[in-house]
Image (tube, rainbow, N blue to C red):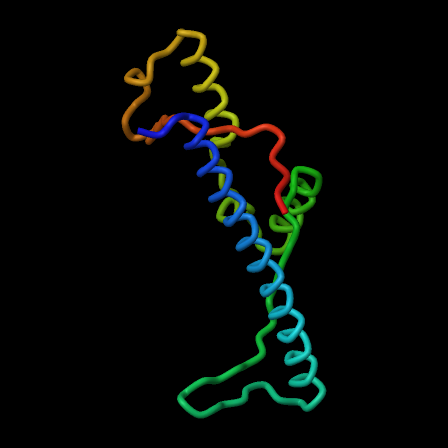
Length: 139
């Protein structure tokens, strides 16, 4: 049976390999996005909307839409939707904030104020031991 020190050394080696692979993946993703941007620019410059290649491959341009919906502009959005669509109700979704209820449950369970079996099953509470490492410098 391995000692904690031996197992920790194995963990650190595996984590270092993971960090290296993640850095390589990030670098390859960045390179792919640069080539993608050049291809988009070329398609636009040549007025091409779609190009087909052998084997059924095809590239085509589409407009992607992205908006900012934040606490800061929430009321402006709601006002605009009422003005332009007549109602904002179909566009508003009220949700419990997972981050805050997770922290609430963690604190209450750790304080002994609540046991895990008191949390309704449909909430999907899942607890498990996790490893936290201080001083690790990701590459």
